Amino acid sequence: MGGGGSTTQRVTFEADENENITVVKGVRLSDSVIDRMKEPSSPSGRPQSQHRSASGAVNDEELKKRIAEELALERARRDSEAQKRRLFGKLLERERISSNEHLTRAILRERAATEEERQKAQRF
Image 1: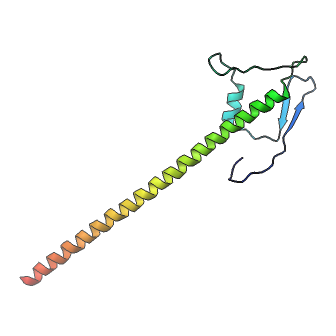
Image 2: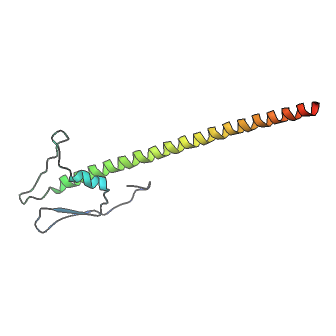
Image 3: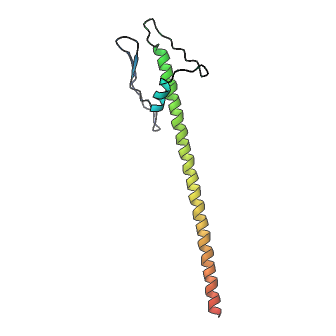
């Protein structure tokens, strides 16, 4: 999941007493994932067929598939953000190096100019 290492997580699926809600335990979901899951499926989006049993409960396989898709999307988002942070860090490091080089050059120019002025003053 995160942090670079793979860990085994225990996930359980249970139906409530009326069997119209499936309870998933052991899965962390971000607010954005929860919000996307709450959104009704749109006709222009990918079709979201909700297979329901005779009692009206969502099919466990369909729910597992949807959760896996949402987790994959969340993982891809986190990976993308991590890559952006790495690239930004590299950019900042290059900027720092470039700034140091410019500063070093400016200091050397100033020292040379100061030395030249000192030598001119000695001649007079």
